[in-house]
Length: 317
Image (cartoon, rainbow, N blue to C red; front, side, top):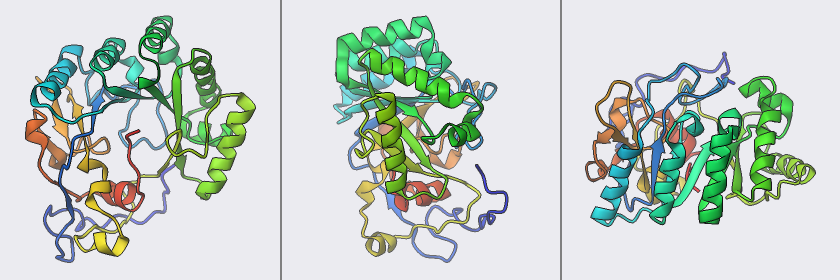
C-alpha cells in the first residue's frame, strides 16, 4: 500500500531528459536487441488493487482492448524486419478480460515465440471458454506458454489487503486448476512488507509445498519478487556515472531489450512505449511501429530508478 507519510518526490527531478536536477548527464539506455515485445491487452481488470502501478480496475479503460489484427501487424513486422524477438508478453489490466486473448496467444505461439501471460488467475481466466482455450494451447504448445500468477504475499491476509477479501483463495483456485491441467506456471510476489528476500522465498516455498503446486520458490524464474513502485517516493536520479558506481551495465535494464504496445482509448491505432511500467507518460511514447521505437530511452522517471536500475527487476521471463 502507499505510505501516506512518504516524502513527496522532488518535481525538479525527472523533468529534463538530458540532465538531472543537479545538472549531471542523465543515464540513457539504447535498445541493444529487441528480445521481448509486450502487448497491453487493455487496462480493465476484475479487481482494484490498493497500489496498482497502471491503475487497473473494473472501470479504467484508458488503455482499450487491443484487437487480434493489431497484434498480428506487430508480429508481421517482427517477421518482415527479422527482429530478434524471442518472447511475447501479455499484460493488462487482466489479459483474460480481452475477448480475443486466446486467439492472440495462439497467433504468437504458432509463430514460434515463447509466450508469457501475467494474470491474477481469478474469475476471468476460470470461465469455461477461457479454460477450454488454455487447455488447447497447453496441449499444442506445452512449455512455450507460461502463466505468471500475481500472488502478492504467501499469506491470505497480506495478499487480500492488496487485492480485496477472498482474492488469495480465488487465486489459489486458479493456480490449482493450472497445475492440474499441466500448464506451465510461475508466480510474481511483491516486496512491500519489509521482509528479506530469503524470508519471502522461504514463506512462498512453504505455501507451494503445502498446496502441492510444484513451483520452486528459490528459482528466480519461477518466483519473481518485484520491488514496490511509488511514483511519489523520493528516489535518486540515475546519471551516466551511476553505471560505474553501481557496477551495472545499461544492457541489464529492461528497455535495452523490450518494448510494449498499447492502444489508448479513442485512438485509431496502437503505439509503442518504452516499457511496461510507463504506459501513460507521453515522454515514453516512441512511435507507431517497432522500427520507430528503436531510439534510446532517457531514464527520467522514478520507476526507472526504483524498479529497473536500483531494484534490478525486469518484467520479462
